Length: 121
Image (cartoon, rainbow, N blue to C red; front, side, top):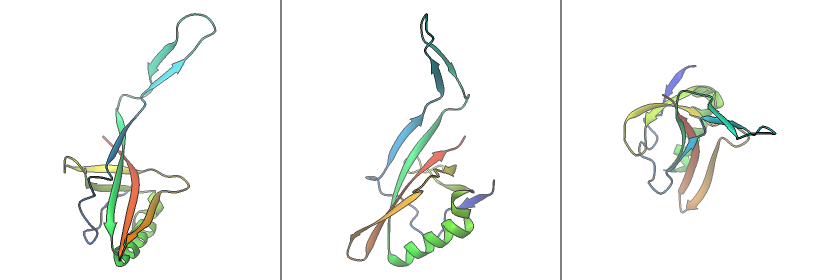
């Protein structure tokens, strides 16, 4: 995977109100017909999904869409950017799916960009 930095011409600090963090389950469970449930770790690394939210202008929206599609290969590459709480530079995997990011109108000339990334070890 190629690691692509977050563009320097986009906002560098996400909004605090848009922050969320959810651990990704590392345990698999099985309920046999007889006896207690069985559980085991299926990974040795604890991962978390982290929600980001940025306030963008219309020009920054265009820049983000171009970066996501071209440089990030629509989310196939890794993202290098600061953790929204600690500020430490981390590598992230884009949460892919039908809707990898969302942009909504905030009012005036502002938009809100939100997405979820998986923090990698």
